[in-house]
Length: 452
Image (cartoon, rainbow, N blue to C red; front, side, top):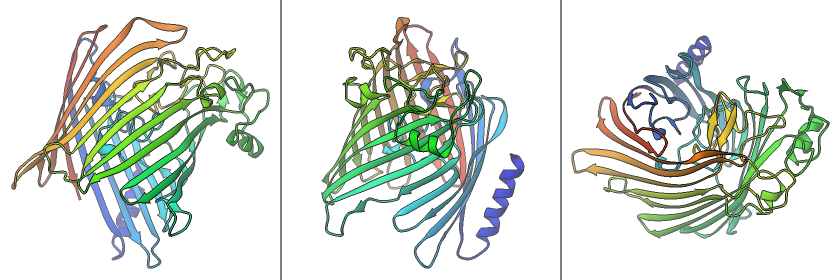
């Protein structure tokens, strides 16, 4: 792995020697201290950290580089690589990312492992979707996606955005070498530059791989087609109340309304509705989902330049829908894909879902959670100190059939401020976690980085 990274870095440097290639990179070093009986970091100090920090990390660091070229026809190619070390997993070095991304005027193709973009100024509890966060390291794969809204005609207010991806989930799970199929489409209505509505669906399916319980799972081309369309599979296929459906399926219906209130302020309304089978797709699990409001100020030097409130609810799970399988049991699958919706023992989506590595199961998927994120800048004409505050409350009940006793009420907070922005950048973090079932946890971190 080290040889692969340094070979990639050498290639990037070689590319950048040509005039048309731009090269950039960064070196990052983090150190953490934590206090409390659990001997781990508070919640927000290790969740949604792109897999770069674990709950018991003391030191982590990564080096990354990327080179970019825009060709004469307007197309572009970006190649990137990064290596990560942290002492909180297995005291090993990992590939943080390694990828090639080719862009045309409207389409992006990516091959490899690339970190996702951070949205909503880093204030969200889950980033892009309730099922697609930056809580885990990126999976290797291939992806095709629109890189802008494609309108049906130059004068039309209607358009769409879409993506189609195939990922490898690795060997560190119950079903080794399982695959993840992912696609999404948003239909867009934009009658003017100040107002936009996006409505669509995001769909995931785990499939293939080698199970120690049921053996090799179907993974031929015909199996792939059946999985993509949620059709029945062979004798090893799994499903929810859609019996014998090939693969383990889940997804979200999504709605986002964006309104610019004035030249410096934009308001977003965010909604995700979860489903794992037919009961959820017909809204028998309502009101489960994500509800959010985001205020985004154009001037980043304001004392407060971003406010995001999110409410998450997963307590219904179609329990009264009359399904013979009972509750939906979000992100779990006990028929074949026991490790659930995780990658390298981390939840792929919203981190309020709790995964137990010893049980290899999601042990908390029934909760109600409030999350508030605020960002701003302490600044004057000479200096600026960007800051971010995350505050959350989660009422965790466990899961249907195996409830927590007692229920857990958890308060989590994180404050991050950038104190240096000169030759190097220095961030200081303070975290806290308080609950009714454990002693308080406190943590602090220093994040030192250099861009080049």
